[in-house]
Length: 248
Image 1 (cartoon, helix red, strand yellow):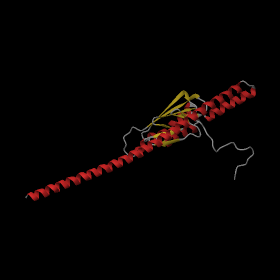
Image 2 (cartoon, helix red, strand yellow; image 1 turned 180 degrees about the vertical axis):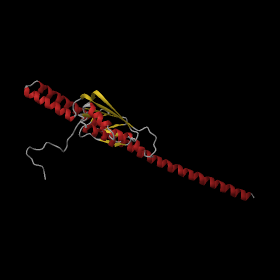
Image 3 (cartoon, rainbow, N blue to C red; image 1 turned 30 degrees about the vertical axis):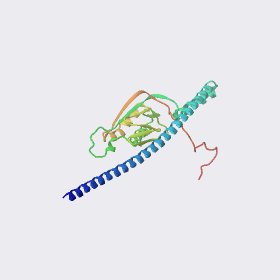
Image 4 (cartoon, one colour; image 1 turned 135 degrees about the horizontal axis):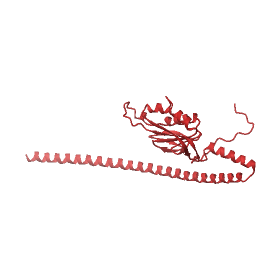
């Protein structure tokens, strides 16, 4: 009996030792995996920090270039304004080109279009269908342009021919900056024409309203649209030589 009890005790000790060994092994494996994950996270964080610093340096450089170009433009304008009749003609052309390029703050009559995500209950199961997307904003911008809008901004971002409007997750990127709904689109032009274009039956606002997306259009006597705040860089395009025929 004593021998059997001793064997059972030894067996129990061996079993406990095996369990403890298994638990220690699992704990060590977990620590190794956690250490590896921490190392990977740290490496990714360091890479992201480097990318952020590079982007910040580039942003500061572009801001300095913008300030310098603005100073040069002001000097050119002052020189042109102090000249004769020909200089005044050049000044007027420069102002027109600045407006077309989006480099001048503008004000005038127009409309304000406020776009808000749908607050209706989702009955289709398609969550994305109830949110505002880049193509929805593009539809509004194109409608306003077709109706004669002379200047357009989205959430304060001046829209140029080179401006991008695209989805980036749950937000929309405009001129490299991210914005979430609501989206405020301002357009300078004839208020009545722009308002009628946006509110016509089966128009953009009507179609978006079918998804519960709110599109509020308001005519304004005076709107302010800021100039383009970024820097336009042309790495490949350049003025064509005079008299050169098109290739092909």
